[in-house]
Image 1 (tube, helix red, strand yellow):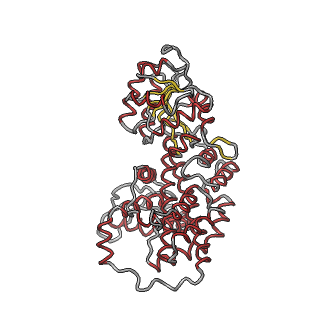
Image 2: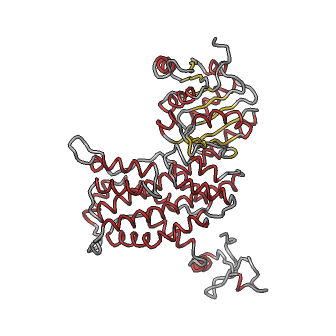
Image 3: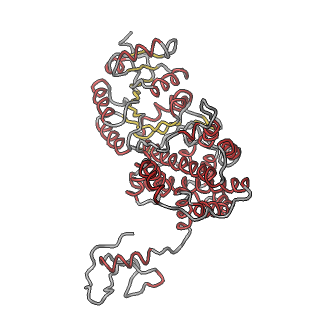
Length: 493
């Protein structure tokens, strides 16, 4: 029996995510072979959670490979980093040309680019697959974002599209693109998740400190928002968190230490944005907000030394009306965050030669994942209607949404500033929007400064170009009369 190739899918790594994904695959009519470095875990899994299901065990990587039908499809759900490379090296001697290795962990996309090229050179296929939805999603329907070797997709597609989440009866899984595209899109997903969560926390902070609302009142605000444009998983769970009581009957959320952790994917997104020159400001501020929260002891000392506004602004008379405006401000800020995320993916696609399907990505995020929301359906429509859409904010639906929310957006932010409530994500969203809609920004002065002190050159606006100053010509001016005429470097915008 051990030498018979009977399994459709192999999975290495029996932590909770791995176990749940195996059970999900088995529930959809596929036979799965499971392996874990600690083989006792395989025995326990087969005797308990997998009992009676189409799951078989392997006590070595070699045995797992023997039990798989060709082309072999082997998924790794192990800790990102060296462990993935180690298992790939263990697998290689036991597979053949055309077999497929899938990394379903939270790997950094450059590692997936490297692994894809390495395995393809050896005649194998590689898929780096983003998996979102947590333990529950893995069991009952995650969002899956596969990318890598295009030849592998037809073999994996029936399994992945069977087990993934569905939105409007469409699978939340499609081919993302080449090499590291799958893990890149998952990274951006996680970055947007950081932004969504920070915006929600700032809205909570405004209601708590600015409006002096109790936990149940705040929960009701989130419940109301969840019935409209903001309908989403994160709004829904925030409603439930605000209503959750500790054993003494008081809100548990108010007893939790205000220091936020992070695993690094938001930071990866911000770093990639800086590398590619894309102003993904909201995700960046969300990452910095978490790092500021970690300075708990320092903030406590600062609270006793540093003062805020002398008054907290005028009294908010109609709190219900303010909450309505706050919801509109949250929606507008969220639109900007997603627009920035898709700007980043567009530039990454150019840099890494990926053919990304933006409408497909929006659908993948529509269900199963942490940022799932009704709003993503509108993003899918925007890119379906115009695959070459330059910016999400140019789509008529989103332009109108911003127009309708804009006065509330500005009012809420101004009031939060007057009250001294920190709103880095809200404020950077509006600052980006205002900067993006300006045909002229003060960077002309900045570039003049650079040329003055460092001879870094500048270019004339088109309407001021002539024979002496041709279009797109780098120019250095001797601003002081005694600085010389040699430029330090070519100007790059």
